[in-house]
Image 1 (cartoon, one colour):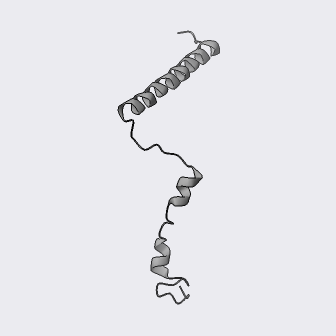
Image 2: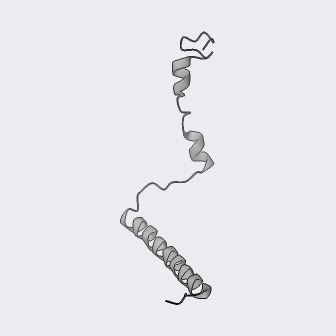
Image 3: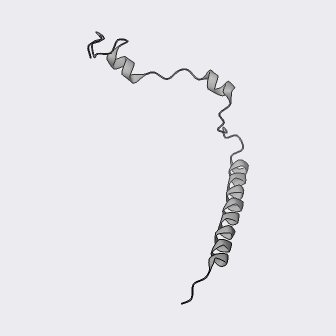
Length: 74
């Protein structure tokens, strides 16, 4: 069986990439149409500022100074 060659291989990869992008766009459009009130994920600064700081599980166990008893020895 003869080799296909780089031109045909690149064409196939390009074809697959183009159709991937088209299908992904159609999928996202379908999501938007089927669930219009869904919350969109964004990393806007305003939304990030409103979130409370996460609780640090290490601080709960070790206290402020370090050790399990909060003595700093540990």
